Amino acid sequence: MSATDYGLIGHPLGHSLSPQIHAALLAAAGLPGRYDLFDIRPDQLPDTVRRLGRETLGFNCTIPYKEKVMELLDSLDPVAGRIRAVNTVWHNRGYNTDYDAFRRDCPLKPGDKVLILGAGGVSRTMAFAAADSGCVISIAARRPQQARDLARAVREACPDARITCPETLDAWRLETGSEARWVVLNGTPVGLWPHVNEMPLAPDDLACCRFVYDTIYNPVATRLVLTARSRGIRAKGGLGMLFGQALAAQKIWNPKAVFPEPALARVRAALEAEIWRQFPLTVLLSGFMGSGKSTVGRSLARQMNLPFVDLDEQIEREAGKSIPDIFARDGEAAFRSLERKRLEQLVRKPESKILATGGGALTGPGIETVLEAAPVRVVYLDVAPDELLRRLGQGRGRPMLAGKTIGQWLALYAERRPRYLDLADLVIDAAPPAERVASTIKQSLGLEESL
Image 1 (cartoon, rainbow, N blue to C red):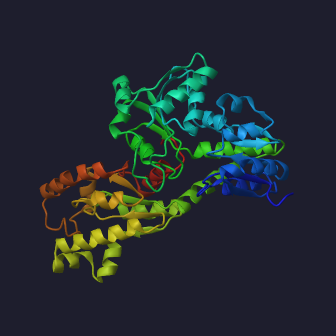
Image 2: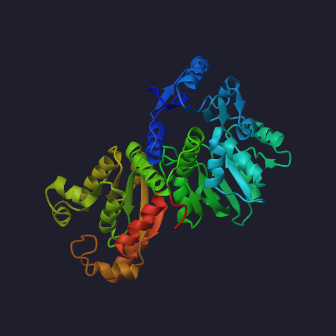
């Protein structure tokens, strides 16, 4: 074996997960080997390809070299030849494992109405896959000419492909109609960590969708995916595709290897955990008093193996007195000031964690600025008023409820609930037991496409 048995060439490579994925896959199959990154300049490409062809068992290729590498190879697999993009090389032959990985992770049917967002490398793969599946395709890109160029390339390989290229999303919206029938495939970087609060579509656009596939995998569940799931729409992130293309590459390099399913499941789980480690994200639980934020939060933190932080406990520790005492001695305004300051500090802290907030923490003016300035996912625990009243009893230890009539409680609930919904990335029914609610949140934030 050489010092490096496998590797990835590209520029820039940034926070690539390829070494972790391939090391885990090699271990799962009981194979030796080392996987390294080669961040190279364009002028280094020819020499690097020749050297790696001699010294490694195989290597991967990513942007901006998926097309340029083809002229340096002896042959192309038919799929790579059609798509005109290579991401895996073995014995100086080019393959495209993204294509099969996408088709397995996102099955499409003849006649599906597909909107592809973006016209770059991953959109190219999805466009060919959609055309081969007999879909009716719309490609919307920031640069319309790039979308038209992609459409032309697909038609040359698939003469029967049905493709349009709306100049803008507004033009696409005119096609949508009222029926939920579209499949949205996001190939843009919009929503990629650390800009996790962005979405490539407006939330209202999802009304005409029946399935959403976002090729972004960091974070595991983008705002686009969570918004779709909150509306009852099936949605998946791109981690399955990332994993699938790596596994397919290993099977090309090691055709006799066996990858047991239990071991692969552990690799996928470890990969998801690594993303939470490398790309910090705060899962913020919001909701009315009595919705179970602290109890659910502790359970969720255990299930996801993440730290748990209770905002109220942090405030009490910092102030050196209980929250009822802060209200009684300093007033609500002083408490809200402490609450906002501590909340801002916590969401900016660069670590993945579960953060339980007080019932009024997200109701103050300008809280959007705090949330938009950090990688945060807001999960609203939704509980019906009668169940909340049962849980809260007389509101002991809760200054905002003490001494209030039922009518006043309900008025406060009615005032706050629209705010909770407006800020939420994910809405969860929190009436079931806390462990079950936490499990539902974990599923929604992770690999599962639906609940």
